[in-house]
Image 1: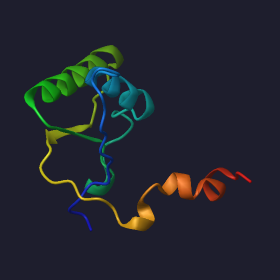
Image 2: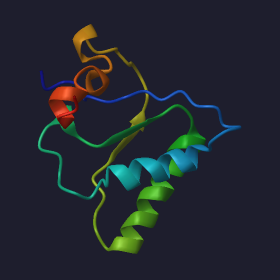
Image 3: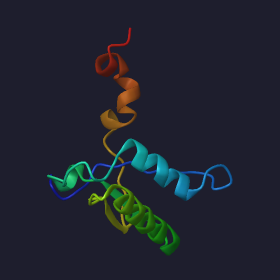
Length: 104
């Protein structure tokens, strides 16, 4: 169980939103400095597809560290394999909004 990380894969149109804007949104919603990862499964991570994405991610992390004075623990590595989760995990929040958010 500990040899994977739970993550999402995002497809985007760079004519609509830039990779840097995606990084901004990610770190706005999921600060990588919250705490050290306690398991590989739940670590903060960015898996890049090319050197431009790698550089952008590393620059964003460096910017956040300089601005906050805190260490960012987000893992940055090349994308190798991506496996879809089991069907019952697909669109989990959407399928379980009533339970998660108390919606009627």
